[in-house]
Length: 175
Image (cartoon, rainbow, N blue to C red; front, side, top):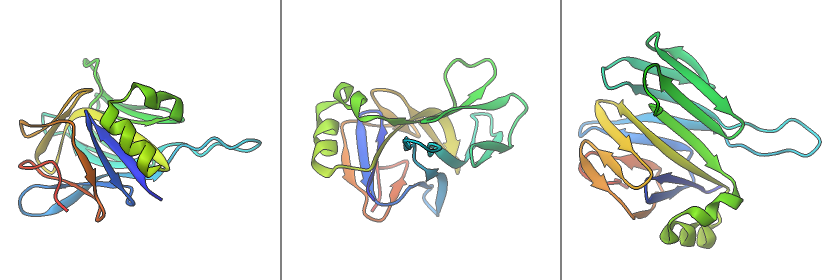
C-alpha cells in the first residue's frame, strides 16, 4: 500500500504510515496512522485513526492513542469525523494538529504537481496534514500553502519516501 501525505504544497509518498522527525541526533516517530478511512457498504466503516506524540508551543505534552487523548494539558481536546482528526487548544481557532483524509472528489482542488503524482502513483490514501505544534523539540507550522520546519520553509516538493517520511529542520526530508 502506498500513502500520500500532503504538507502545504509538498507531497510525500510512502509505503509506511508513519511520520518521523529527526532533531539532528535521533529519529522520533510523532504520528502514526493506525487505519485509513474506508467506507464499507453494508457494514461498519473503517475510520481514520491515529496515534500522535507532539507538544503545544508552550511545551505541554500531547499524547494521542487510537484518537483518544491519553495525556495533555487541560485545555486540549480532540474532535473527530470519519475521515478527520483535529487536536484543538482552547482559545485557538486553528487546530494544533489537523489530519484529514481527502476523498477522490477533492483532488481537483490540489496543486497540479500534487495531482500529477496522485494520478501517476495511485496511492491508497491521500492525507493532508496541517497544524502548529512541536515534535521532539522541532517546530512545525503547516498551512495550506507552505510548511515551515523550525522557520525553514518548504513548498512545491515531491518526495518518494521509500524508507518512510523523516522530516528534519534543515531539509524537507531525509531518506
